[in-house]
Length: 219
Length: 219
Picture: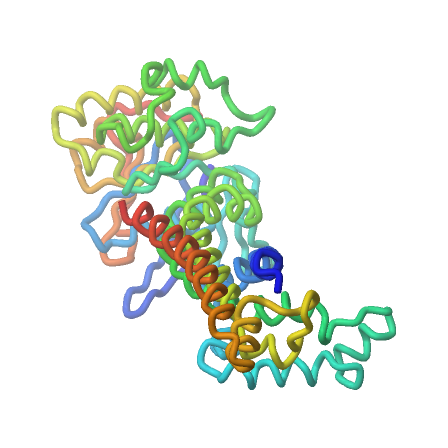
């Protein structure tokens, strides 16, 4: 078993998931914080759903959507893209599971930005996009970054959705969490423990960073 | 020429304004809750009246009958709100340059020397005193090259000695840049010193328009 390879693969997938989440999450967070639109509560609820649903259930929904007979999977299949049981499924599962954490934290960040600044920027001639990029985004940035780190940490430990939609293929879709489960199940406790220590170290570093950012924000 | 003719309601408060002002400095004068700031918000486009019209010189900024509603960033109205809202993540220079408009903005050096803020230019806005912030906020509004300046109680937050120091800067803006000003105050002495026309407001209604004796009229 290649411990470092699994750790590296997990970190890479979680990073990719975070990179995908960021633009979508920031946009959703900003919409929820600043715009009133029909279906706002519905969007908020759907985004937060993975936070409270059994991850395995989320994984099953993803599997149904992404399998070749599923609505999204069928379309991707025609483009020659296979998602299920590949690293892409790992990234996607991580992104969906981490998104609520990013959206919630970033939204709070946008809400803390005094609307006065945005209004004044508009009267100074800045169109809405410029107001967003030069005022709202930089002022909410510490929260967005904190949320991204939290979502990244959540992605690192993702298990339930990953195992359903990506499986546990050694060298292809096996992440730290999935590997720990497989090893423990087959009685390789010592090996499993080594992976546990590695994932603890990574998670510790990520959470420490998130807390450090939060403290800087408060200061 | 500033022609205001609109109605706005907010909860139980209703504002009815119908005045035409052809002056350099018009003061909106009245007790708090009279609707002074609401009028400025409507001129700046931060609040949209359900019906009526707002015309500055020959530019129609808002007209419910012809469905014109120029967005705030295209109104070219320099707004200095009561609570100074310098962007906290930018230094003084970047604040001043935020609304710069090639062609219509005055030279930065001119505004900076007129307001005597040369030595503040590279400071963080959080390090400024109340009077300094007022001047920078005024400078920032001027740098956007406005065709009209809206000042919401620019002297209310500062103590009397400071007020005496800031008032001359307002006079300079009025006399040197020749930007028409709508000025909100509840201090009659200040109004008499600075404005040439006073619009009296009480409880959302215009109760009178007075020309200040001896004030120069714009022809």
